[in-house]
Image 1 (cartoon, helix red, strand yellow):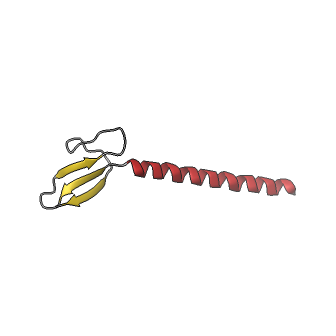
Image 2: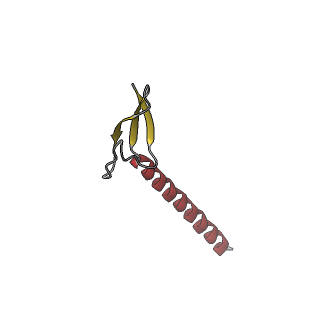
Image 3: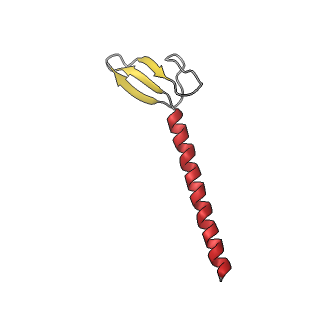
Length: 71
């Protein structure tokens, strides 16, 4: 009887560790996305804020980024 409770507790702890790890990985990826500023009137890229060592420019945009409009 004690072994069933122990196995259940180990399973719950394992699931919580996996969920926490997935949350940390997703948060880290989201924080690394650059912010790309687009002109509201022309729709063209005006600037890129890079938050990692990878340098993106308006000519070389990443696949995923935060889209922000400016005047």
